[in-house]
Amino acid sequence: MTGRVFTKLLLSFVLVLATSAAILDFTLRGIVENSLRQEITQSLTGKARLLAGEARPGDGQRLAALASRAAFEAGAQVTFFAQDGTVLAASASGPASANVPPEVKTALSQADKVGSTEREGMLFVAVAGDGLVVRLAYPLQAIHDTTHVLRSDVLLASLFAIALATVLAAFIAHRAQRRLKRIVTFAARMSSGDFTARIEEGDLDEVSEVARALDMTAARLEASFHALETKQRELAALLDSMQEAVIAVDAAGRISWSNVVMQRIAPGATRQGQALVHAVRDPEVLKCVQVALESRELASGKATSVAPARVYDVNAAPTPGGGAVAVLHDVSEIERAEKMRRDFVANVSHELRTPLTSISGYVETLLEDPMELPPHAREFMAIILRNATRMNRLTEDLLALASVESSDYKLKLRPVKASTLVRDAIDSLAGMVIDSDISLDEADLTNAVVGADEDALTQVFGNLVENAMKYGKGGKRVLIGARDVEDGVEFWVQDFGPGIASEHLSRIFERFYRVDKARSRESGGTGLGLAIAKHIVLAHGGNIRAESELGSGATFLFTLPVIQPAGESGESLPVASASKSL
Image (cartoon, rainbow, N blue to C red; front, top):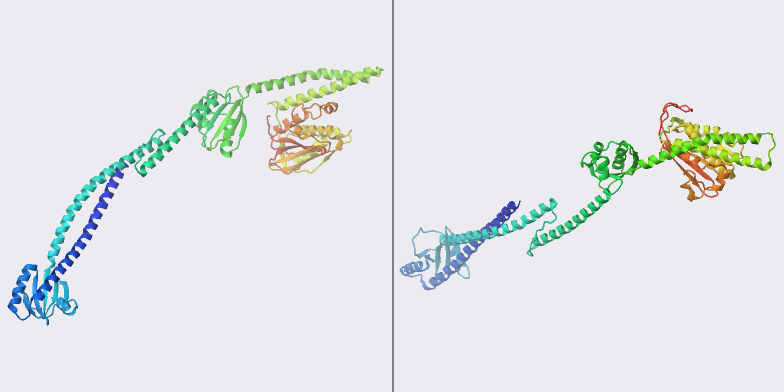
């Protein structure tokens, strides 16, 4: 590239010099020719005036001698004309002309008595005198010869100047080439990642200012790059020190980075540029990363096949460059402890059922015995029966909660109309409210079809209605309804009791959580009914929440996804049967 620059600069200099020399030659030739013509014309005019003052028209021999002498002295042909145009004498013989020469006519007619013309390669100057006209003829070839000599001298001088200027231009072009070459070398080193490159130009001209600006830019880039490298090393050290496995992929799903934990549990993740699907085969990890890449949204899941006998919580998030990063948190010990807890609760509850049933049976027998018992003994027996009954309900709820929380919990899903679910629930729960002063009513319904395990949802409705009866009995009424929402059906159970304070709504579905612990115990509640309802709804792929304001009652709402029905009858359709594990 720099060689081409040198050639272009040199050729440009030579072209400018050659053009200047040509213009100078053309201009100088015209100026010199005009100057010579004017000088010769003035000289001939002066000599002709002298001859016109000296010559007399009457003496022919004297005029002839004067013409010869004057022609020798002036270096031009001399001719004397009478005023009628006839030739009186001439320094050189020539063919006689019947016409009066134009310069003679001009001299006779002009006030300054001078006339001049150019023709036949000659410059003619005529001056009118006393009774005659003197004409001098000078050959134009002499002017051309003088101009040619001058042009030759100018050409030689121009060639010498061009040669000298070419050498100087070559030096300047070579110097500019070297400066540009330094800039090109600088740019090449910068593009290859060498930010220590500098041009180091002196204070000469605008190119030096450009070079100095580029050096400053390179210095700033070098500092920024070093700071970025430091931050990257710090970030890598931080991520490597984490207990979680971290892996990043680009927009095409290829691995761009992974920390040491990820490389330990999935050795294939160490190969940068490899497709993630070839390094990690767990479907949950791949699904979360795909959602983050395509939808640019956060995604989470639980991976069980990344490493043997290990369980990981997976969280994937999009990155600004179009890729995604996934974090795998090992929850194997937590899962193992949770399973042990569930198994322990289930085993203890199961073991307590038999003695509690025996206690309740024996106490009921004693209370129903016709033999008269002392009043304080009957009171103690009633207390024993009430607490045994509550403990029995608690064990039943613990067993139910352990069942729905278990990974073995299965749902028998069937397409059912939402209105059918609500009406069946009201019919099955009618006996629960028959001895109370609370009415259980049907609200607005929809015929949209959802996938549901009817027995499990009856338990959900039962727990929600029982909760409404215990804590909202002041309203004397409980409503159950269903309405269409986006991509689902929302079921709701509403009471008109005292309501729930807003600070309790976020925790109300936790196990053993009570808004009013004293009233809950008095009503016989175990604190597990809403937790059981939550787990059943989540197992259906839905969600559950509570809305309430103090003094306005409470509404419990859960949403189930809509499915396409396999038939158009109003009954439940046993066509689509599926199972879900929690």
